[in-house]
Length: 341
Image (cartoon, rainbow, N blue to C red; front, side):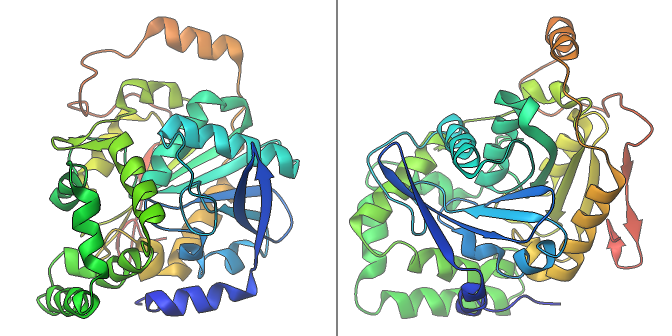
């Protein structure tokens, strides 16, 4: 069932208010709710913790949910700073440290998926599970619009969206592509939301700096595929929309093959935001995954053995076939299509 419009999501989120902590001199915004094992929700580029409006209350029934606004996004500060994936992973570590949370299950969407993978790579001892939602960093291909925004002059191009009448024209285009039932149209409401999230030069500068850290004119410049073999022993779930026009669903299959023991769930008909398309199912799938898997038991010796063995075959793209994994490796299918619980 369709998720609420963008503004509706932000209004629904008011029940889970923003908190703030100053870390390294910068104000970091975040939302928390619930009690139990920690689940960390990491949003995508240009977005904020408000994107999880329909997810947080459901997860908070059984888990402690933490949803930060990444630096340069939402209500967090937007300084001239390090907006790399590794920098974001360090920021997540510092926030969890301030909040007194030792370990968490990471749920990362789009750019947030890349941040979650980087966190698990840098801090495996603090990662219980890895849940990647339409994640960046598992292939080179990305929507041409994002490649264009990474080019010089992008700030001027984005600033024109704030000119009188441009918001209405963008809205008209979004409605048109949705009416035509294009893949990009599946996320029309979210596209408008991203336009509204860049109201000033500071916001646009932070957005462009973040984008250029992971995307250039050729596509995604950062990939974790060369290190995916290290996920062996890390419970990993991949969630994707079958009509994702930002990070195509074939990236999900490539990542699934490259990550030993991972599970794959495809939301048929969904675009880049499957948790907006069907938040109830999204919660059910995540809750089932957490319930049926044990937290990762990180071993320095096992990590060392994996590093020494290295990844077999090529490391510059998705592997040609499935990687070896335990019997838990599976693709789930159900009455609503591939991946339904």
